[in-house]
Length: 454
Image 1 (cartoon, rainbow, N blue to C red):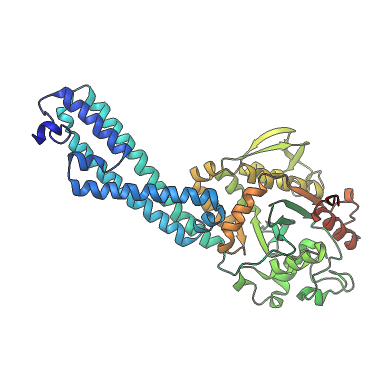
Image 2: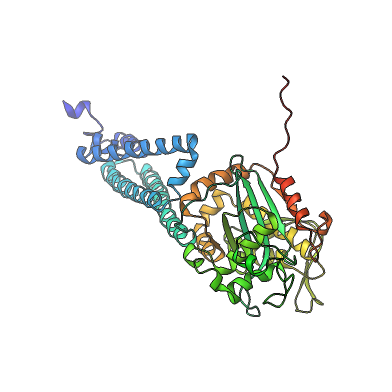
């Protein structure tokens, strides 16, 4: 009697039409609710295990989605930690194995040889394709999670979190310009990004690398050595007393002034530059990010290039005397690979440092806006490999969730800019630092609001 009332478990093996319908039902059920096929037509113990695993996975996915929608900072904190990433990798690997096992067992239960001849290839192809897609996706997700864990451990430190100062996070961003002809790394671009800790509004303060008489923050090591500004009285211990020489001053000449820098995930050169940036801007800087411009092109290539709106012709030289032009960047939208993006940012032929500052900021903003989750994930191996070589920072891993959530707000707002250039009345050879701090304070001050009528 049970063979008559349960044709899924006890089909008529002699009817190709019945077996074909049964095969399609089993394949669809295996896709819709893995484990149900075994409960209905195979090993019920395996089916209950598969169903339990499937329902648990659906519950976990639902809870994860709810947390992401309601408490995004908690979600990001979990999935930017090594523990959270490895847990995700283990879950995805486990489910990939379970799905593979259930699908192979479904193919066995289908009895393809009993189905209609015309239907057999379609049934086998659909089952195999779905299996490869689901198992491959889960496997790739596990790979991304483990690779991301390694990347985060290599780039971010395990230090203590810093609170916002006056409601803001201030980050020193250095574009490193290392080379065989240079005495160590020398910052090619220096800026401070000040971010409102609530709204995510970001203001980028571009610091000319040729600023002179640079002041240092109160109580700093170099501030005690140069109380009147960098090189203001007795000169300095480098070839030029300008802002971007301060990195070399700390890194090569006076590393003993910063004995704890390396242990804290920084370096003497970075700490010296941070003291200078604080003295110039009047802001307390919590973190730094160093971008190696030599490796920057690899990151651009890994992301598939970057689209830049070139505002005016930019020449690229092919000799050190800046007399011979190799090629030009013409005005208009251009898709650049890493090699050309790097040249666009660094070209000096016939342009000023202020032009370069604007191009570098434009490139940074374009890369950030175009680095979507889709192209990061699809090129993750290249991005992670390049990122390890390109980025150095002392942002603690425990703060990543907060900053990623804050960055999602920043991305929806225009990035404000404060350029310390002659157009804004700043003379780099004789800068008025009181005027500079006033410019910055005005840019960061919240807009005045009318008091409500009493």
